[in-house]
Image (cartoon, rainbow, N blue to C red):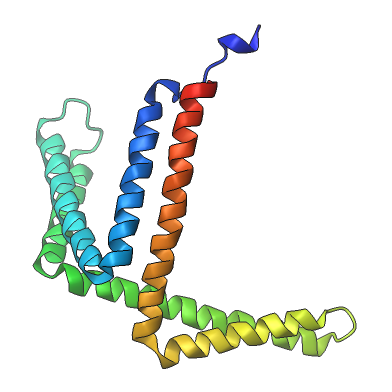
Length: 183
């Protein structure tokens, strides 16, 4: 079999990968320019998506021909629509709470794992490098700085997410054109 006859399963859909990359870059630009406004819009879209998804599940529960368990589909639909409605009532409050939860998880993880690195070095001085202690102390310092200035740290996390999204979007565009040209 020649290699010319082998194709990638997504070759014909290369343009979807490119569009996805463009969408991620646009979202990243909005996150850079208007971080809180963009988070608010994400909350609205998430709420609308959950309501739409819930209504589709409810319709499948009543009208679907091959739905194995209608009661679970109905329950999933009701819960999805309910939580979507809650998010739409206060999208910024919901996403801010989610953001703070993630923020606290990151801050306390840095403190915990930084402390473990330092303690491991102290216990076994011969087998660990001094750089491990420095990294552990830097992790602790970063965790403390995050807790000392939470609003600034949360905004920095949003900017870092935007940068990551921009890089990811560029890579998706490259992958999409690679699919078109090489498969």
